[in-house]
Length: 185
Picture 1 (tube, rainbow, N blue to C red):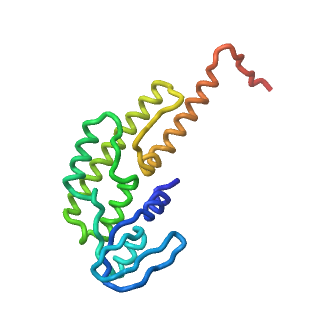
Picture 2 (cartoon, one colour; picture 1 turned 90 degrees about the horizontal axis):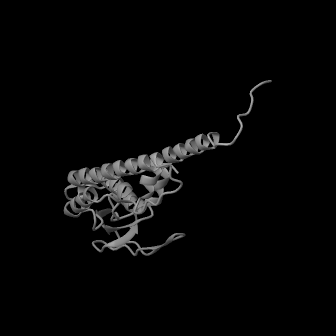
Picture 3 (cartoon, helix red, strand yellow; picture 1 turned 45 degrees about the horizontal axis):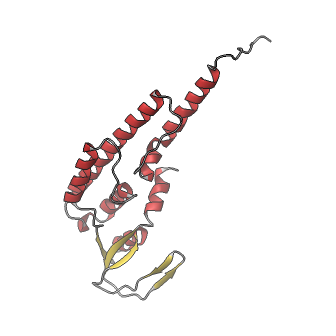
């Protein structure tokens, strides 16, 4: 899975918008949305919220966790713990990127939020690299990594699977008791 696919999945997360138009309920395959009334909050998928925002049809309300103080606590806790701490949303990185790209004017302290999420991401990726390094050095066969998001797994998944494949090939070639095959023709 590539990052674009993870972002696509994140766009199904719901966010709150305050529309500036009236529209009855919309019936979609993924579920019913609305009704939309000016000034009344309504939950919609992120993809629709971004579309409405781009057409200046709504104001976006940032998720509850997208607050500088809360994100600072999350970042500090992530730095203190040796293990991965639970994130406020499984798509925190994708949501932050999309919301800050399309609705910066609706998010208080947007630059600070961007920095805090990036700091948290960097800390988690560093932990993931250290875990992978330790895993490979100890020649483990399996690992349990709780509280990782799809994007984080996606970031190191290819590297880790290739490293494990190489380790397997090296182990099978160095098994004692096997006779080396001749390359004589």
